[in-house]
Image (cartoon, rainbow, N blue to C red; front, side, top):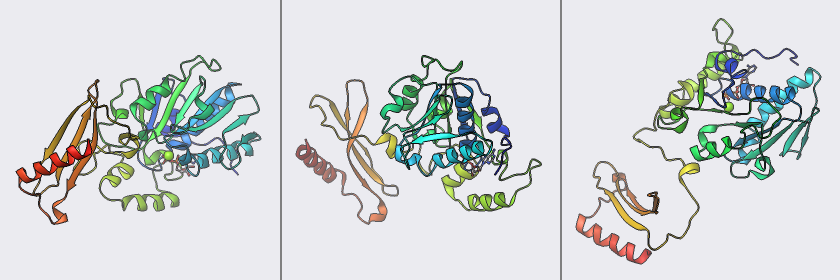
Length: 308
Ligand SMILES: Nc1ncnc2c1ncn2[C@@H]1O[C@H](COP(=O)(O)OP(=O)(O)O)[C@@H](O)[C@H]1O
Ligand SMILES: [Mg+2]
């Protein structure tokens, strides 16, 4: 088993010493972003006794089997060099304890538990593109330095590209490090030749099509085909609630004969936020063209009266 420290290049190397409060490693799949983040996190926890860190994703259950495998890989490398770690919680650990009193908490935005019950020195977000800006900003207020075990508290993360409007691409206080396949020493040799693993991985990524190819192979921030703003169920779907009777309601309509026909029902809250609470969406492929406008409108009124 390897006892040498890993080799880091490009964004992964910069990430090891980046000192900004907010940092993100961004790029296509398998460039080594997660490995570099976990290594940095683990290094800081070893360096500063009593340091408290949180590792999280949008959904806690998604941590297991993904980023925690990378944590295990990093711990195995450290163990080979004589360092031990204790974990609590069996298969689904709640935290990992270090010999120097440092602790790594495991959480999700959906299940923060005790992990975010007080100030932390480091917050590491895996697949940060899944988070809303509000999630990120709230987390940033959990590591302002009050935990007090480290000189430079940080919130950092890794992400794959998403739509160009995504908050990660538009946040001035966030330092974004662009990670590339050549940064990963398991894929490319130092002089830029593909390794055997590299051949396998790149062949698979090259076969991706459309938006997935652009994002996960080419590392481009592009919108899903045909969309301007992307729908993401983890961000845009909220739990049902009863709409106060005094909120303004409007309908939007886009008549489509070639493109889909859409009518949306919206409620507007006192701050101007709009909630879509009902929709008709009909693609031409479904066969039936929308009825004449006046007939459709009668239909909506009926639905509206019925639904209120
Ligand atoms: N610097 C490195 N040294 C050793 N192995 C690495 C390094 N960077 C990445 N790897 C390995 O390459 C694979 C992909 O890395 P990962 O960090 O999961 O990629 P990403 O998060 O960018 O998709 C993992 O098996 C990881 O352990
Ligand atoms: Mg990753």
